[in-house]
Image (cartoon, rainbow, N blue to C red):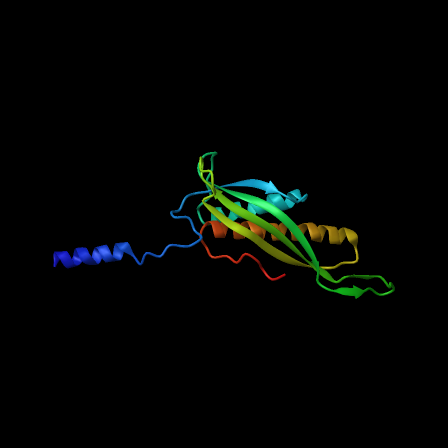
Length: 173
């Protein structure tokens, strides 16, 4: 009887052996650090880092302090894609009916003293749709907000990938 209980306990403790392909081998709290920045929009860089911190914090995996493993986020590009063209009343000049704003970023988990990253998320792209407006000031504000929203979504996606949560690399525009 005792041997069968011990055997059952060993079987239950060992589990099926499943390990996430993209996740870390064991859960460690991560700091967020900005790495390479290839775009001029500083608010987008802040938003990527903020999104990553927010997602790690929600999962209880955000670390504080200067030592320990860190998630380094690289902000690679901001893409703009026209979503349609129309001609406004009284003018013959066509204008964009809307646009898609996409931010591409990448994350790497680095350990202190390790020469190579423990994990690389690859390029992660997140897009936000934006409708056109006739007032350039309103368009500028809406554009800035769309870039921040897409960047925050990219940062959250990078953090989820670093935590081992399956996440697509790209969203349809």
